[in-house]
Image 1 (spheres, rainbow, N blue to C red):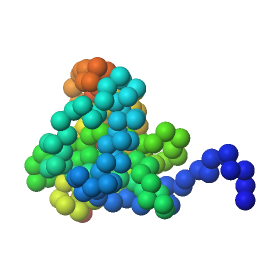
Image 2 (spheres, rainbow, N blue to C red):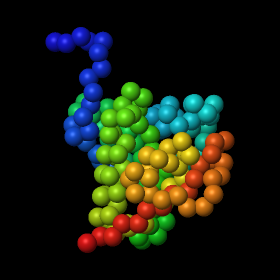
Image 3 (cartoon, rainbow, N blue to C red):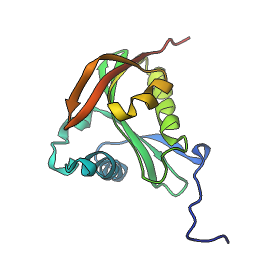
Amino acid sequence: MGDPTSLTPILPASLDFHQVVFGSEAYKQTCALRNEVLRKPLGLDLFSEDLSQEKDQLHFGMFDREAKLIACVIAVPQAADAAKIRQMAVRAGFTGQGVGRMLMRSLEETLATRGVVKLSLHARVTAAGFYEKLGYVRTGEPFVEVGIPHIRMEKSADIE
């Protein structure tokens, strides 16, 4: 065995993407990850928010071989062919390894099979470049959401 203190990089290909059922144990993992990555750094607590509206949203996760959640994202249906992406988070220590890109591509492919071809999201301005590399374009002016600058972004995909 190698040095147990060294981190073994997780290759995105070794991760499993699947839908997460609201209220399930996996959903609780997504909430904990979203709280850790997206809320705590802002001095906020996801668990103080009303999460009941998430029941009708589509939750997805990227899991390692031991079923540990590595990344998650939510899609909110807006119309038969449109969805809003929200709350994308990647576990600390796994950023910069292609996990977020794989999560978003898997999400887009899954939504496309359901007829969704128009996607929108509110990106933190600091993350806009990530989404631009995935084909999202900035629309509108920056605005403040949860106390930090965001920008609306959109992407349309043609299904062949």
